[in-house]
Amino acid sequence: MKKISHLLKRLLIAGGLVTGLLLIVSACNRKETFQSLQEKDMQQDSLIYEKPETLYGINIDSFRLTRGRVKRNENLALIFSNLDIPYEKLQRIIDSADNIFDFRKVKKGNSYIVFHQADSAAAARYFVYIDDPVHYFVFDLGDQAKVIRKQKKINSEFKIASGLIEYSLWQTIVDEKLNPDLALQLSEIYAWTIDFFGLQKGDSFRIIYEEQFVDSSSIGISRIMAARFCHAGEVFFAIPFKQNGKEDYFDEEGNNLRKAFLKAPLRFSRISSRFSNNRLHPILKIRRPHHGVDYAAPTGTPVHAIGDGKIIYAKYTGQAGRLVKIRHNSTYTTAYMHLSRFEKGIKTGKYVKQGDIIGYVGTSGLSTGPHLDFRFYKNGAAIDPLKVKAPSVEPIDSSHIETYMKVAGVLMELLETIE
Image 1 (tube, rainbow, N blue to C red):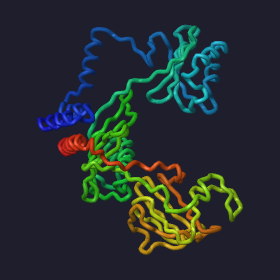
Image 2 (image 1 turned 180 degrees about the vertical axis):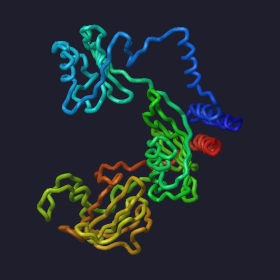
Image 3 (image 1 turned 90 degrees about the horizontal axis):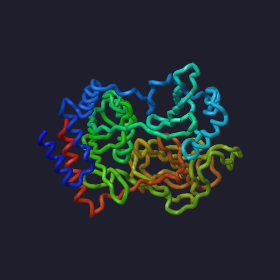
Image 4 (image 1 turned 90 degrees about the vertical axis):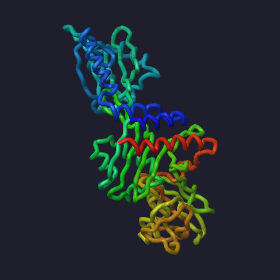
């Protein structure tokens, strides 16, 4: 405990990232957390007075509640009509909801609660529409006839988690009963550093993170504050740091974990056809999706890999002709089609670096002339290559490197220290 406190002092002196790390240590080393103490206080207070029970800010003592869900092809106007809300009052509610609630965006399956007066008439007095776990709208159906947008209190908890890979990162996260968002966020952070399709048994991770809760239910991971991933015998740290108004993750030397893509796979070319969901095929004369960008260039023009990665396909294949497919990480894959020939040594399983020549422009397969059909995939789905925003690769600026190294040193030691 003394060593951890010393690390926290160093972190604060270094201009630390999160004072909430103190909560992590407290949660890891005390049997009674702040939350449990609060619960005890509430129990003691209840002996002195009874607080009226409320739901969504409404005292429910005077109401009878009914719950429901928005059905298919149902809207609030129809629901209000079934509640015998007069048209004039409904119109006042719609008018008062301007810039507060969009009646057109009511979602099928969302919940709502009706607060009925506890008398023989049982008139609807309040209507609460639950937009998501945090946000809800209270419709005052009384004389005021107004709409109020509210949100539940979000509680943050700082946590530490670790795991040993047996089959996959996702399975380990599930087995450890951790929030599945951790797997997604870790794969995003390390997308340029670790091939998550190539994880090995015995790989491991440890992370410090912030998880958000509403009514004791998790609504997701708001931030990973530090991570340590062991893969194939190497240790990869991820330390968040903000510079120039943007936060990125960096390694222990201040290098950005993200790597940029080349803007195009050809040095000199022109775009002859763009990404489309309904293009007239020049040979087949039928309309069908063209989920790529065509670069017109002379036969033999070198084609470059836009980023580091592993070749997962390199051979002749039907309409695409000679095709090279590169998996850059667990998120992104690119394809290069209609090549005249492959570069020497290019084959399935080979690793290439950004800028390496992988082949040459041609007209193999179903093609009207020499060009490169270039395709970009994110999580297996084709996306427009021209709209891909290449991530920044700026390292820690020299003006911030001293502060960063102090913060990174403490966080890395903290990851190694806390069990």
